[in-house]
Structure formats: structure tokens, C-alpha cells
Image (cartoon, rainbow, N blue to C red):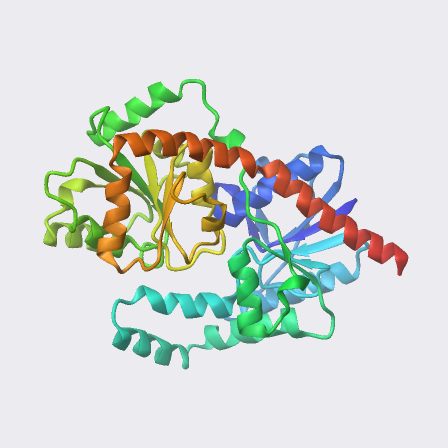
Length: 389
């Protein structure tokens, strides 16, 4: 098939959707598909040698206008091309397939309010959004994507997102294709993993037998770092464990909170890592108390490394867990007792031992290859419909 992928920036070292696009492009190319990328910037070294590039020039300007300009540039470029399948991954329209890996803007806006502890703060934040041009712009763009006259095939990466389409736009769930996110587990293969694990733990000042939880996030507020710090304060003072925090380089205010609550010795703030692989190797479980994740890739990366996962019901990746065999799901990240209890469960060596094996099994049950095949089936459906027409 001749397949066009549309995404503004594809720099896989940045992680998230951009890493996924690199994985998908390489797999498509390996099967002999002609893969085209419509983007403003990319890292060719991290993409297949056979990739066809189409640079889109988009004028700089306010944040709320950039997606419109990129979407319009995609629309113009694709009108001059003949591809079997065109795929949009973010704020674009007019493609045959839309795969909103970041979920719905309307749902994200709603869930973003949950990160505030008090109802008064949530009300104030919601009121402020009424005057936010980006919120208005992105909401209008999303309605253009999904409620316009030409209906794309919509692929979503969790049943949670599938429910959001019905909740916010009245789109019947049965019309959407659910293809859970997946990662390439080969990125985490290493024959010398035990050695690298100990070397990393030595850098952290952690004993070989001390339980270590890991959090990987760039948006600390949305992903629940503050509730995590508060939850550790509910655990007994003699509980022996550490929490390693990898992500955004600015974490001073969270260090201050940990100091104020008297739990600073339990945390290792490691800042940004271009490749967090060593951190996964050094950890024993993942803590991801997020307020919104359509289907968190860090949870899938953790499972691939044999780490059981603590997450929340606001994470579509929780659907891939078997609770409590390989993970625990918290209802409300702000419930410090509930989150603290989940951490306490992970500190039990017997539970952790069986959960680790179950995590590896879970990673094996839903693989990138299965994800890829499901997506290619959707692409084949599009091509067949076009040929029939």
C-alpha cells in the first residue's frame, strides 16, 4: 500500500507519539509499504531509509493558530497526491483515517480540571478557559475533524477514549475502531540488564534489595506528582523504598513539597532523560497516578520491562492490566490513602515477585506486532473502499 502519515513533528527522541510514529513507519517499510511523511520537521536518522518526505511550510504565529495552519497545509498537499491511505494523528482533518493518540481535546480539557485538589480551584480554572483562545480554537477544530460532512474512519487507543467520543460528540461507539497503543519491546532488550540495573541504582544511592518505584512524565501536574508525594507521607516512617522521578528538568517546587512533608529522602529527582531505559531497568514498579492518559505508553514500556504498574482509572492503558495480578488501578489520585495503599502493596516482596512475572506475560499478550496488524487491517479496509468507489 501507499500510505501517507501526517504529523507536524516527528523527532522520535522526544518520546510519546513521535517515538510511536518512528516505530510504525519502520514496521510499514519492512513490509514493503511505500510510506510518506507530511510534516514540518523530522529526524531522518530515526526513520526508515525508504521514507518519502514532504515538508510542509507553516507560518509561525500564536499557538492556537498553528494546528489550523498545519491542517490546511496537509489538506493542500494531499489534494495534489494519490495515496491508498492517508492518516492523521493529531489536529488535522480530511484524511481517510484519524487516529487521535492524545485523545479528545474536549475530554482532556475536562480531565485537566481534576488535577486541582479543591472544587473552587477547578471552578476558577474552568472559568479561565472561557477566555482562552486556544481552548476555543482547539474545540472548534475538533468539531471540524469529527462532525464535518466527510466522516473519516476513527481509530482510538482505548475504550475510555471510545466512550469519550460518545460523551462529548454523540458518536456511536460501535463506529470506532479500538486499537490499543503498543510499543516496540525490542527497544528494551539488553543482555546485560542486571549489570546496568545495579550501576544505575548505585548512581541513585539505592541498595540492591531496596524497592524502587519509578515515575516517568513531562507534565508533572497532570500526571499526578503532587498527589504521589502526598501519598508517600501516609506510609509508615520505617517503610523502606525510594521513588525515582524522570521527566521535566524543572522540579524544584516538588522537591520543596517533599521537604515540607518530611519525605524528601524517599525521592530521587533525576530530571530529563532522552532515553529512560536505564531507569526502567533499575526500578521495581511504575507509579503513574495520571489525571488523563488516553493510553499511556510509559505503562506499556514498564510492562515490557517486567514492572507492575500503579495507575488510575483515567488512563486507558489500565484496560490492559489484570488487577491485581500485574498492576493496581486507583480511582482518585487525590485520595492519598488509596494511592499510598497501592504503593504499600508494591513494597511486599512476595506480591512484587509474582506481579513482575505477570507484567512480562501481559506485555507478551498485547504486542506491537498485534497492534500493527490491527492497524494495517484498517488501512486495507480504506484501500478496498476507495477501489470499490
